[in-house]
Length: 446
Image 1 (cartoon, rainbow, N blue to C red):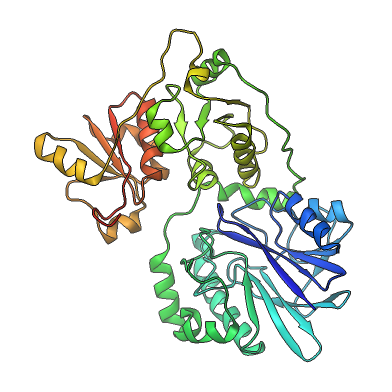
Image 2 (cartoon, helix red, strand yellow; image 1 turned 120 degrees about the vertical axis):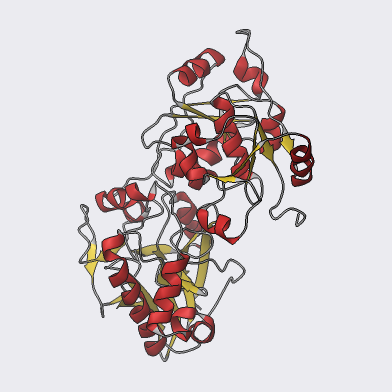
């Protein structure tokens, strides 16, 4: 009996897969922290024989080389990818066997030029296909990550690839994509869908229900910004990244934390926005673990800036460290645990606080006095609807545009409160008088 186990990374919106016949296994698109896959294989009592990449990833650092090294598995990568490490080059039409498992390689360019999908075949049927960033649930992988000069060619290749999969695979074949669960590698999100088949996608996915021109036009019109750290992922993946060092970081005291802040380093408070608002070390930035921590921090931070992590517990620091390793931020400069009183120390400084409010509070205060309403949602969200008189500076642009925020008291808001809290901490660290709206947009929907 064949078992397919999805290993999700919700913080990045991706899934990896372990497939086993009960004795041997292979893995598709492993994340950097390969210990999860190793534990899973150990619990199942199976031997990982093959590791397969659908493409050179843009949104995370692969665990492929590290997993292959740890298990002795063959590492399968498209022969056309200019990788700098030992691997087994494969191409369209190849068939790879491991025990009773057999994968057929399908070239499915579109997300990248060298993208591959893998059809799982058993005698008489094709139960599954691993589609990476090609055919997703209700969508496809975005075609613009390699630069605008390639986007038109890739979007048309993506269309052709999806139709190839629908043409060559049976309707009952289950679809197992890597992206599409919140990843910015997806051209659109269908997070409510947790499983699908070629037949279902043929009836519901725009790439398979629309003509090529209509599909391309709609997809390109809907694309929005993607995280800045994506620019560094392909180079790291082509070089063959090692397994991350997840040992505890250097422990920093209050004096060292103050020094790092003076030096312009990022000291990041991992606690929830309500805990941060109640009290925090002045100058620190709030990227809570209860939201898109790694995506947003990786998007905003100047690449290479030392990061110090502040968590209530060592477990919070370890979780954040693992999240950052997945996007190539390998070693925090330092860490500290406890609370604001511990981090401020006895140097005479006191913990700072930051007001939280609701949209009802914002409406009331605007009737009493002028305030700056700063909407930090992305441009596509802003175009759909926004508050009258609000200023839109997307969160990922805010660090470079702080001087464009109008003078006066600033009220930040987003869609749920997470990005508003990040923005408020950035503004507070810059000396601005700020209130974070911790509420759901549009007003009244929470």
